[in-house]
Image (cartoon, rainbow over all chains, first blue to last red; front, side, top):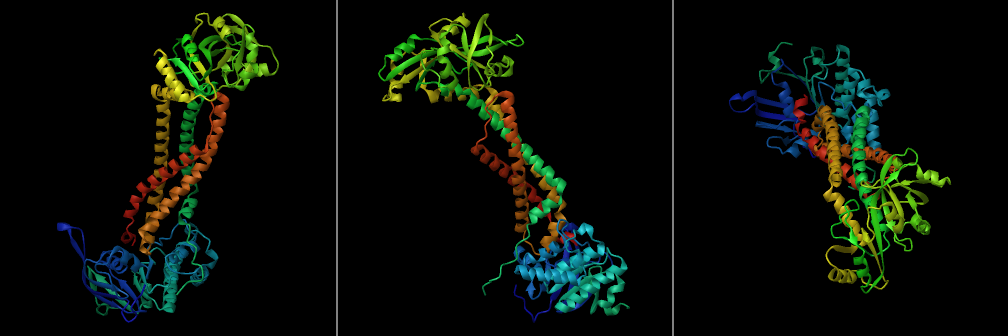
Amino acid sequence: MVTNLSKPAISIANLNHYYGQGSLRKQVLFDINLQINRGEIIIMTGPSGSGKTTLLTLMGSLRSIQEGNLSILGQELLDASKEQMTLARRNIGYIFQAHNLLNFLTAYQNIEMALEIQEVTAAEADTRIRNILNAVGLEHRMDYYPSDLSGGQKQRVAIARALVSQPKIILADEPTAALDKKSGRDVVEIMEKLAREQGCTILLVTHDNRILDLADRIIYMEDGYLVNRSDVAE
Amino acid sequence: MTKITPKKKPLFLSWLQLRKERARLIVAIAGISFADVLMFLQMGFRGALFSSAVEFHHSLNGEIVMTSSRSRSLISLDRFTDHRLYQAAGITGVASVSPIYLNSIQWRNPENKEIWDIYTIGINPEHQVLNIAGVEANREKLRQPDTVLFNLGSRREFGAIAERFQSGEAITTEINERQVQIQGLFKLSPTFGINGYLVTSDVNFLRMAPFRQGGLVDVGVIKLKPDADVQAVLAEMRSRLPDDVKVMTRDDYAKAEVAFWSASTPVGYTFDLGVVIAFIVGSVIVYQILYSDVTDHLPEYATLKAMGFRDRYLLIVVFQESLILAVLGFIPGTAIALGIYQITNLATMLPMAMDLGRIVFVFILTAIMSSVSAAIAVRKLQTADPADIF
């Protein structure tokens, strides 16, 4: 997919979003304006139910935009077709709160799945999968099924899967929530290191205060509004 | 730019997914095999019914067959005067005519003295009436009084006659209170209506069946001269003979027998219904397996959607799974069915035979069964919403 390099990674203007229909319709996002530059690492934080996940799914092209503008790598997602939305997802690496690995595939095959929709040769795919497994420290676990891996190992496979296709943007929704402090920190550090090497933009939703120092910028969300973080004490 | 290096080989996701859940895979294969075995058995019985029912018809040594106009089947007979047969003999193109007497006669099992009805065929021993090797070889022995030929395919109820005869033992038993001697064996499969056969001469037949009147026969076999036109001779007979008899080609005579069994008895319908039920049972099993498989993997499918896989990719995975199951279930199903055919053959003497057409047909049914189930199961896939996994 052709992307415009001069444009910001993510650009959001006057975005509103609603759940429900008719009289039950409830606004969950209010006039969101946000600009994320290429290579930036941003942490989004805020209380539960403040709309963080909704915003993340909109950026990830997983939900249709209702009002306002949202463009990813220069591509506008307002009124995008189903096929355009599917293709937009291919530029984004996802890291889920639960690892969401395919249980019937080995660690190696799970990462391979991400290359299934990319134009790569067999040799290149193998090299990339082995390199990324090395980078997350799991080369000795590549033939293990998710059920035989620890929580931290599974999340590291998920990160490898998100990064192997060298996406321009990584969206991560509380990737450390299911992990203990130590492995949580490890996982995010690996993610940050790899992303910096690939020049990739990261937006990370988290409640975990211990990883805030990794961010270039922290944004804060409350009751569907984006609040300027500089107003909030460090 | 043209690619010269081969693109990465795609992961065989459907098989990997099936293989991981070993127990479910085995249940699915067992279910499909079971449905296939049921279908094969129903079709096998149906085929055996029809092919055994017309073995006698096809053995008749003549192009044209005459019966009473009220005869419908070997088990629904009516008699006609052999005078009609001799009238037919006068028609141009006819080479010879032979009457056949048919009746169930009481046979006493020489071992346990039980009485069973046995289907007895009375022929003129001077004529080749039946193209059955065992009958031809021993036909002339039937000139002797109270002699019969016994059928190899007869059921056990009549006694182990064939085995004992083959070991050289002289066997006599009682038919309708006359002592008769077995003079030879021939092969004719039992049918759903007939347990066993005897062949004897017309003279012996009337001795064993004193209630039958000579000259009133059941079937007439008409042999034509080599240059005769069958249809022309038939037309001539129909115009010359009274309507108390009907004449037909040997093939039509066999077709009428099959039509009797499939239309005038519940047997044909029963087996057809059996095939339909087996098909439904198989479909339900495959559907259950695929549906729970799709349901269990819904979050994983949603993940794939979120990664940018199209719905089509997932649909193909599920259809591939259904076809893999169809093939894996079909192979043992066919093997088991072949085994059961053999066993049934030995136990009932019914000619259960597998043919390629039936194998292909059952495979097509299995593939349809699996794809239809997959088509219903994938409706669930639409609900794999990528937005729900965050």
